[in-house]
Amino acid sequence: MPELPEVETIKRELNVIIGKKITDVIVNNAKVIKEPKKEKFIKELKNVAIKNIIRKGKLLIFELSSGKSLTIHLKMTGQLIYPSTTLGTSPQKSTRVRFKLSDGKFLDFNDRRLFGELRIIDDWRKLKFIKELGPEPFDIDVKKFAAMLKGTSRPESGSRPRSGKIKVLLMDQKFISGIGNLYANEALFRAKIHPQRPANSLSKKEQELLFKEIKDTLSEAIKYKGSSVDQYVQLSGKPGEYSRYHQVYDREGEKCFKCKSEIKRISLGGRGTYFCPICQKL
DNA sequence: CGGGGCTCCTGTGCGC
DNA sequence: TGCGCACAGGAGCCCC
Image 1 (cartoon, rainbow, N blue to C red):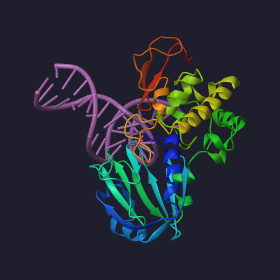
Image 2: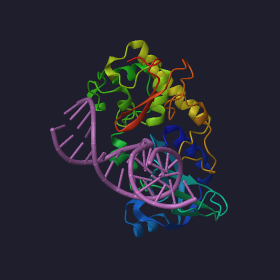
Image 3: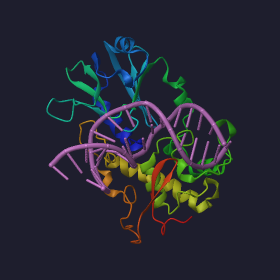
Image 4: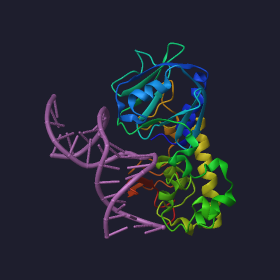
């Protein structure tokens, strides 16, 4: 479940490979390569340098010296490991693609469930996923956020009246980018808002608090290098430390840290949704 | 439009 | 102790 903080952590750590050249590509499972086909994918990367690495929402983009870009989406169980060691966390059974760099070390893409997506494209800005991506929480102000929730934001930015559930909306990458199931749960708890609240029903105070808590939760998670709940690890293979600060996620039946009542779990948008029925008002 | 459910997959961890 | 299966949830898609 890498979300914005996890992908941002990896992106920052990947700084060390900027300027290095890819000397070889080993594909153990071509399913994660979405375009172009395996042979062309390998050819496009060989002897090409990594010029820059950026992140858009949960998507990593490697800008290459060829002018093209390699995009990597970790989806749920994707990992990037560098430098890979034979004794450490990589390579392993789930190592799907290995990039050999000009320093002789490997950057490994591991992905247990094969949901991850690698592609090479001429212009990442033209990707449908990118064009439809909503703004990041850090790129907007509270006024804009409030307008988006109310659905009164400019039509060309894709805003409509938002009567859907707030938690489902927060996870919608076309609405706002970077938030997944874990941080949607955490931010809503901190803002004392029930996940089933209609998005356009929030009071001005609630909008402000939610916006603040989204940013604070994400910032804190970045500070602690992400949450290792399932598969996520840092580039070095070390787990992220933020999991120990989770208030509700994966805590069904345990006591709320604030009011001691029982954390509940429901399903929203097909996702496990955790909340405190006392602290979070419907 | 919202919402629910299914799909892509596989390793883990639970219940029996 | 072993076996089988529900579950994890990012994002796209389909249908009502």
